[in-house]
Amino acid sequence: MHQELDKAIRWRELDRELEQRRSGTLPFISMRLLNAWDDDEPILHTFADDLESFFWVILCVLLSIGAERNSLTGKERKWLLEILAADDPRMSGLVKGSTLRTFEKSLPDNDFSPVLKVFVPFFTEIMPLLDEGPKVAKGVDSTNLVESLTTLGDRFYEMWFKAFLRALPSLPKTWDEVFITPI
Image (cartoon, rainbow, N blue to C red; front, side):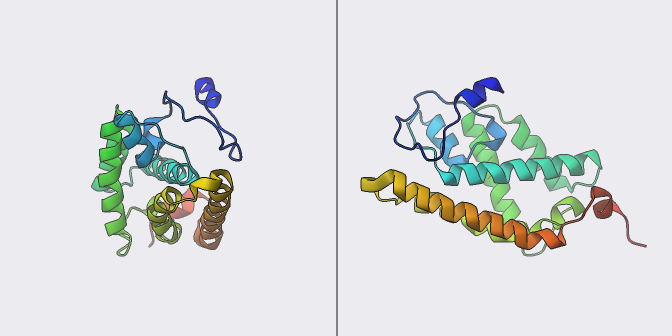
């Protein structure tokens, strides 16, 4: 963990050299960074990477809770095992891409286990942001990179947090509420 913190960057300090070495926990690294890592290409870590990483952390935590309670669907169990088992950037990126496509297709039908169902309002709002963030970050004004990425980052963080706050009333107060079988 300490080694990871050595690589931490301050969000407002974007006028730095691109790292030639990579570090991170594969299950939580954005697909964009994984692809660059696999291709051995330097890349600027942006707000879009942070927000996608946050998505993977949330998803894996929820899947882990569901696994502990033996309530995951077969596909969810597969997602968790494959995400955590991927041991190189290429495989991690492939697994995440496949998981994300299946996840998105399941959202409209709310075809999930109880632990994921309660987060569908949040996930429904952030999925377009996951897609839009990297595209927006890629097209930033390179003449004023720090200002452009800071402004965009602030906007995207705000959209994510507002989505979470809108979903908050539908979230359970305890996990026991989620796993109670209706009579």
